[in-house]
Length: 629
Image 1 (cartoon, rainbow, N blue to C red):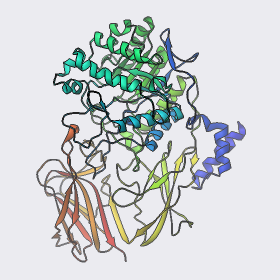
Image 2: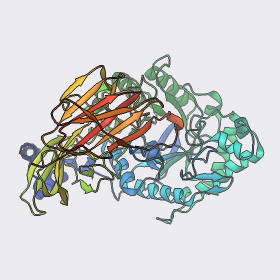
Image 3: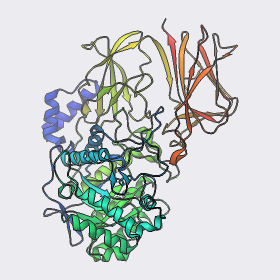
Image 4: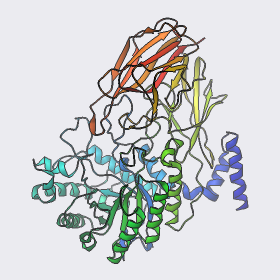
């Protein structure tokens, strides 16, 4: 242990000097201390999870967990780049592996995904879905689920898979009934509608994974099937559907997805139901912790394993009390709501939540100062602690992050990368050639600071051809550098304002307000500037402005922005702007209209740019490009 402590002290010393951790030191650190917190790649599973005497078992060992809902693991609903009009897409393997490796690093052994999506009558034709109609299934979507199960086996994380939603966010019970021209209530009793749903269950449970050759009903990475999400299902429906699942699959458990905060007696008494569950959100009385203890006692008396399927949107002390209640009561496990993973285009996916006073967003491991309003870093730390504690383990040291991977940005200026599991921040280096010499141009770059944009813009770069590389950092050390990215041609200067504050403005007038609420309507842009009619913000750059981009959100159909330029800061002349709207309608979240402002032609010699609010609009980002000296 003395030698191990020396190794960690040495790593911290190296991290402070912003140099790569020597490979031998990294390997020694991993062997001595950090291996348990690294990816479980290649682990696989020896047993199916079973139930007896009110507990879950992995072979002869009790199986208990604190972990996460990862709704988007198999179906992304947050593809919200400014210029993207379709929020839905299938995840790729980088994204799925990032999610499951993060859960594993946090000590989680289980992930609950969201439901299988069902085609809705108002869905655009390019929106992907799993279930297209009665007995009609999207093979591309199920090949993604094949990949999710393959990666789950490799990362050592089991899945809870609910079949259908009570709600219509992704399509659910109402859509199945609608296929037959019937109201939602028919889903619970109409023979034709129930037969359609059973055909979906049959297709999924008996499917053979195209990547592994394993039938789903024989895949040990599945912890259990769940009848659905927050269902308003009559007991007779639950019993029939649970029995049908068991007739197809004798290996896996079945969880009743009835919508409850207090367990219903019928579910506790049903022999076809193996696991019972509840969900907990703000506004409940009594507290999460008390309800969990009461439910756990009732489940134990009936010898049913009990899982807290969702809980969230309350202060960290209440979440900690709930996790303690799960652990102390003998409940099988609990799943926090919810975790989002990294985006293959750089950064993370984002999802603001309507509950909890418009403060909470889906969480990102290991947390960021951007989430201070809801104590993201503190909650993530406590969730990891309890995830190991419920297993009788102490949290191991984190691994030094893997090197990031730089990728071409999809739009705008700057560089971006696919980040590293467990990284808290990044170091950016620049060089005139791929071989160096390398200069540090930024430290403490927060991967969460921007949403759906390039993660870093080098405002200090002089004209020329430059290469970039990035290192990931956490408290265990600094990664090896990414492969060099470039050459990036810099032809002039740039100023980028993400509207987190007004420090980059030369001058302001009128009533301006920095906004951090209603992020979902603004495609998850976390920092925006709003202004009353006539309010202005002025920028000044060192040399002649060559172009600009203003990323704005029109909150209604009235007005917009007026843009002017000046050589000396007075006598501003109007600029005709090209306005490009990226809008596919308000959708389920009442999206505002994203409009990109660009100049048709810039006046000669202008060094000042003035933006005036003339309608209901918010600005998410300003980019001003100017000529080199």
